[in-house]
Length: 49
Length: 391
Image 1 (tube, rainbow over the protein chains, first blue to last red):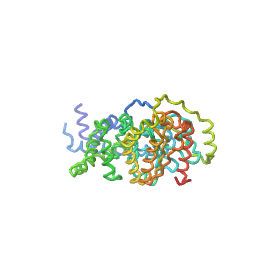
Image 2 (image 1 turned 60 degrees about the vertical axis):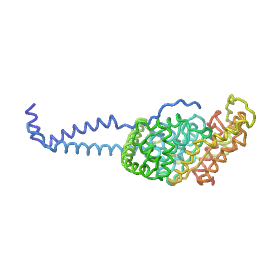
Image 3 (image 1 turned 90 degrees about the vertical axis):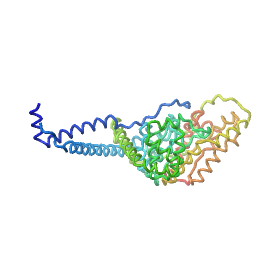
Image 4 (image 1 turned 135 degrees about the vertical axis):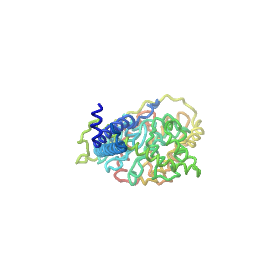
């Protein structure tokens, strides 16, 4: 594990890329959770049909 | 392990945000492209997204072969000759794009029109009026709540295309239905400030204005995405477009067939009252009805946005009202006030008063035209669209 981290620390561009992917995944999840619009209206009993 | 470069997270976050922004932009363009391509196909539909969103309505106004018709339950009731179906095969070169459902009162229509904004400039638009909405002093909160759209309301509240006075007067009406503002702090605050209209209110409104515009931008993006998803899910066909040959309509024949095939709806069970015994209360309610104020706000909005509107009003149910003690003289108050307002705003009005005593105009005892009623409506819409007669 430590060897892998050392290996990664020696590659700053890869580090930025992987961190960017992590942030991108977070943004994607947030968009999926809260990004959808709700255009439904409250149900109401319409007496005139 | 050596610590990460202090700016690694900053660079990574910036990169992720740029990629996400580009992807969102591409998705929005794709969805807008779908709207442009399929708005004709979606014209007869009455989905929540079409009625409560803005994107599809805006797109409809950009098309030269679509006529947007605002109204209420008459647009939904499944009756032969209904405008959306009658004009679906482009019999004279256009389709009707209905917007409205049960209980769509003027205050809800006002927000739909205001949300379309500048796309209305110079465009034809028809508005179908249900007289019964004007018979009660207050607008039903169930009707208004059931047709409320936060996106459309926010578009009105932060519109740069409508005057401050118009937004203030609309806000004062909208604030009477607090249930619709629950959980929407930005809109609630903006409407309160608009309605208050003091110097402090104006300053606070200006302070919250950027937040409102961001809220609008998010709402519009969601609207486009939902429209794109709905179009994709419905798997529409490209072939559903205007035919090369426009067949035309023999209106005399359409009206003749409608007259011959129409069925009179069964008369409602009514309590017989002496002639004219309810005149005073009928006129009092009609005179005080809030619906007039909301209707006038629509006319002001049409004028400020530079639209070319046509007003259509169904007749009153003459025999039913007569039976329940409302005389012709009292009933005439509706048409008089309608004509006065239409004239004040130089808006063409077609009021089908000549059918007031004709039960065959209707599909039922409510504000729902039948086969005959729709035939006459359609003729007027066709004349309006093609500038055939001065209305």
